[in-house]
Length: 359
Image (cartoon, rainbow, N blue to C red; front, side, top):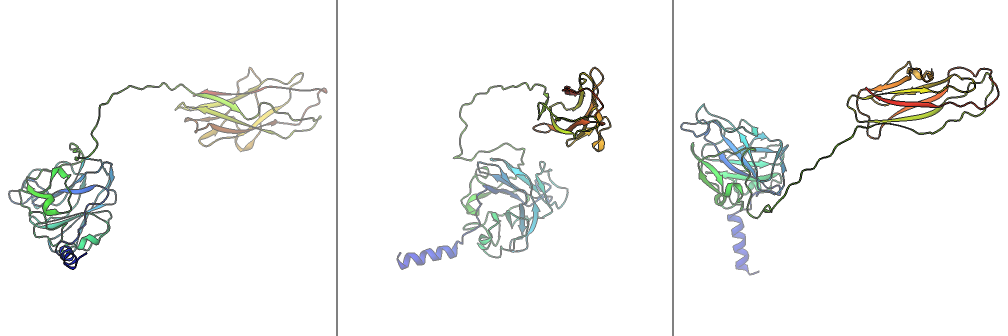
């Protein structure tokens, strides 16, 4: 590179310092009005309008719009929240000097900053802390959280070669192409015009170069969801082994899983057939799943006799809500409520049935 070219490049950098251009989020300051409530004002409040010219929604939660006077480095902050959809606007309502002018459209955020009616600086910052730059042109370019900067009127800092035009009680700084133009030069990107605040409910504006919607077709889709109420056991059979008169076999576990999509919930009951040729004192204890309530005196791990069909079944428990994903597991144990009586030698069998009922 020649010495003359190098000197020319350095001179250009000194005359036109690099500024804080809009960041990757695609959100820019698209309109500024500082005459709110002044004599002859168009609108009652100052405002800053933001625009998302990107192709994806931008979450501005935790961001701030900040204001400093034309020569100042003390910035006032206004917190933002929510998301700006692609091609949509976001209205930040600020201070009012008096009850003069029309009311703004419903604001998406509100603050108390009183903007300079002719000159000042606005920064869109991806954070809540007040910045401290702005004393000279390009000074805010080193602030990594500055998403966009607009100096207007006689502002000391701005993007590019110069500030946007000064404001008045009846004019605003308007970014060209409804917010889409961003060359990094406030003087080029903004012009003075009639204030026209837009909020998140305003019509979307697609920037040139974005994907154009193609032809489309629609299809209606429907699905009927059937009622679900089922019971499953982890063991198909239980065998206590061999015992004799006076023994009391230890209870055996049986996990009962109930699946239900009924909003009102369900009840789980148990009943059995009698042992043959002589009945034995079969009983049950249980532990309820989350959200379930034990019934039939089963609390505390007590073994309660299981009724013999056709008697009414024993209520193991109830739940007043649908079952959890994968079903509710009722951890039961089947045993004997007392020692075995003196009965004839042989094999004794019975069938225990768990039934889920809608409530």
